[in-house]
Length: 196
Image (cartoon, rainbow, N blue to C red; front, side):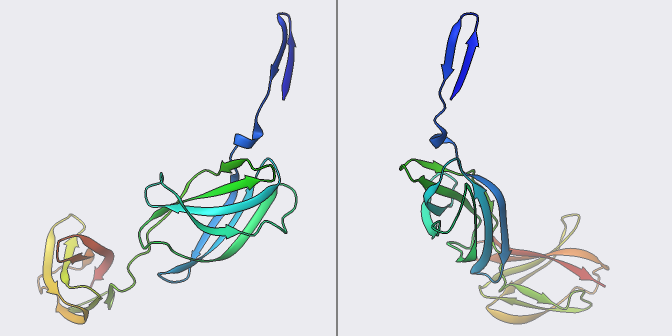
């Protein structure tokens, strides 16, 4: 509550702190594999919490509960939590914290975005390459090499699993984009490739 005494009279401004969001102090992720990662968060709130729920969303608008954070052992108004979580989706997604205070008031943290996990099943070697390249894919489609200038230098149909591709003999030593596409032409994975 703020009280101000000015020449025109006494003004009182009352703030409802329950509408203030929990604020992230730390939000760190460490990816372990395609499905799980380690999350370390610290945040602060204006009042003592009864419950804290991490929520996720594909579009940043419609959120659903993901995991409940244990708040029973926390002290003061600064909280920390670390743990392993399974990704709700392989695509990028949004995260926020839903907090419920002891008096029942609910607030939300600022929204954070977690990136998509690169497709670990799409691999190429050796890198750098000379005359041939072995690629691996879990989906049939097309493999392309595109120069840094954007010029397509190789397009080859690919199946599932490892396969060897001969590089064009006229290919100059440089860095290229290796692109995996599905059968509909959608990009599944992109990686840089150095050709000697």
